Length: 401
Image (cartoon, rainbow, N blue to C red; front, side, top):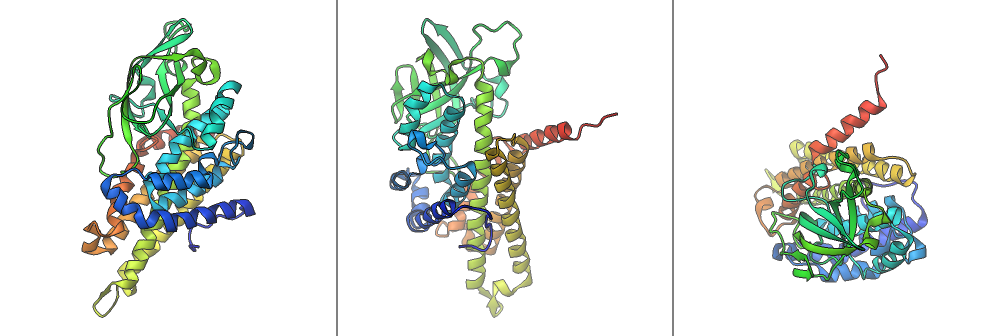
C-alpha cells in the first residue's frame, strides 16, 4: 500500500473492499489498460470482473441487493480504479449517478423496478444533461417533452453521454412546461425522464438514436456519444419521482456525487503518475547517478507528492460531508477543482521526468497525459467550479453592513 493518500477512520469492511479493488486493479487493469486504450476498445472483461465483485451495487441499499456502502467508500474505490485506468471509473460513475438519483428521488415502483437490476449490473446507467449548443449552462436546455395522454413525447439532441451506447437506462433532462405559467424560471420547468433502451448504436428504440462513438483525444475505451430524440414516447410513470418540474434539482443532487467522483478520479490518476515518475527517476541515470539524486528532480517529486496528498484530503472531506447528509456543493466544487488541476500538474511533471520516453506510446505516462485534461472539463469546468465556490463563500460570509 502506498504511503501517500491514506484515509484514516475506515471500518474493517471498507478496508477489505479497498484491498480487493486495489488487487483487482493491479492484476486485471494496469497490465492491459494501455493496450486497450490505444485500440479504443471497450473493456468488457474488466467490466465483467467489476460486476462479479459487486461494484455496480456498491452504493445501492442492501434492500435492493446492493452493498449499501457510503459515498466515501465509493469514492475511494473510484480512486483505485482510476489509478489503473480512468475510463473504467467513468463506466461506473454514470451508473452510480443514476442509481443515486433513483434512490434519493425515485418513486417506490421505480426503485423496486430498477435498483435490484442495477445492483446486479444487469442494467447499466447513463445520464444526459449537455446538448450540442450548451454544456454547463443547464438552464439553456432546448430538448422538450410534451404530454400526450398517458405518455410524453420527447424531441431534441443531447451530447457527451458517457456509456451512451453500452447503457440500458438513461436519465435524460428536458424541458416540460405543462402546468407551469409563462415566465416560470427555467430550472423549475425541467423534468428527468428514465429512458430504457437496448445497448448498442443506431436506432435503439423507436424515436431514439445513438449515432456512434465520439472520437476523443483521451478517455478512450468507454463510449461517449450523442443521443437524438425524435418523437420518443415515454410513459408518464417514467418521470423520475413521478412529478414534473423537479428535474433540475434531481440532476444537481446527482452531479454533486459526480463531482466527488471526478475529484477521486483526479486523485487516482495523479497517484499513478507519481508512482510512474518516482520509479522512473530511480531507474534513469544521467551524469553518473540516478536522476532521482538530482535536486531538480527531488523538488518535482516533493511537489507532486504534496499535491497528491492535498487532493486526496479534500476529496475525502467532500465525500464525508455528503455522507453526513449535509449540503456539500462547496466542498465538492473545491475538491473537483483542486484535484483536477493538481492531477494535470502531477501528470505533466511525471511526463517531464520521463524525458523523451514520456512521448513514446510504449510508456504508460503518455496515456495519462492525454487522459488528465478530461477531468478539467468533466462535471463542470474549473471556471464553473470557481463560480459555485465563490457564490457559496459569499453566502457563508455575507457582510452585514
